[in-house]
Amino acid sequence: MTYVISDLHGYNIEKLKKLLETANFGENDFLYILGDVIDRNGDGGVGILLWLLEQPNAELIMGNHEAMLLSCDFIFDEVTETNIDKLNKKQLEILNNYLLNGGGVTLRNLKKLDKQTRFDIVDYLRDCPLYDAITVGDTDYILVHAGFENFRPDRKLSDYSPDELIWAEPELKDEYFDGIHTVFGHTPTHLFGEEYRGKIVRTRTWTCIDCGAATGNEPVLLRLDDYEEFRL
Image (tube, rainbow, N blue to C red; front, side, top):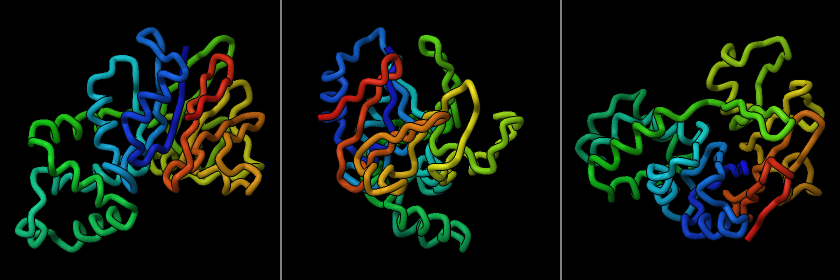
């Protein structure tokens, strides 16, 4: 069975494990997390990242929050007042932008880890793909963090810039590929309309699964084989 979830934003790792147990997730199943496990809440997602390092049957797709964290790699070695004082103007702007987007809690919890583990996490994040193309049953899927900015059906996936895949802001009327269903997060579903708050949104060509965990809603785990939804 193939499962997808998105935008956990510091969700408690033990609750995630419990949610997977609710769906009878096992070693022969596969989980795709469609970006943004980090920032904003709890331990900043560090617990999930440590868990992912050990999971042979789970994959994290790059989200805009992971990309923002990686853009701050100049402070990964150790965050101190001394090296922050040495940052140039551009680096300070990048760091400040990340902090404004909820990155402080993630940086604080990364700082608690030993240097090698921090490096392992950074290496893992650098290897995260921008998208994945899979087939489940008779359906072809593209899994991506945010959908597609400047979408054209004749445009190759490799022609999209990272920003077009991790910062896209789809509208309900938008349509993507015929014959390939796109699944993404990034846009909390209530932004498509209050009637969708806390719910998955599915259209003819795409499904959005960001149900607002960043603001306290429970995330939804979706099984692609039969579109069954699981919640705690």
